[in-house]
Image (cartoon, rainbow, N blue to C red):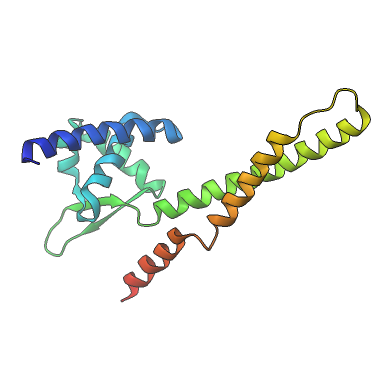
Length: 170
């Protein structure tokens, strides 16, 4: 790919990821584009000036969103010796926190679905002439339980987390 094509692809991906992050947690559009830009820049980091230039936004707006994202622990920054600039990156544990949030959401849903199944089972016993179907509820419960079991400590993503944590120590 030529340099111009890569730049066009980067802009396209920033927009796609930005829209995704807007919908994901109802993030403001510019904060979502900042996250997308940091993802595409990787662990090299992105300076404040680069963000202002690439996203064509005011310094004040970029600063506001950077501070908000730092407060949410979604991004962090580092400095380089002899350089006064901050280099912003996605928080190293963001993906793991997202997985933990999803697991907790699924666990809560498991409890709710178990209560719904218990209610419908009791209802069916007292109303045999108009019973609820429990097929979908039980299938969804099974899916959630299997997902939680898979994405628990046995998931390869957590092995990656351990490798990442260990590599910081070395």
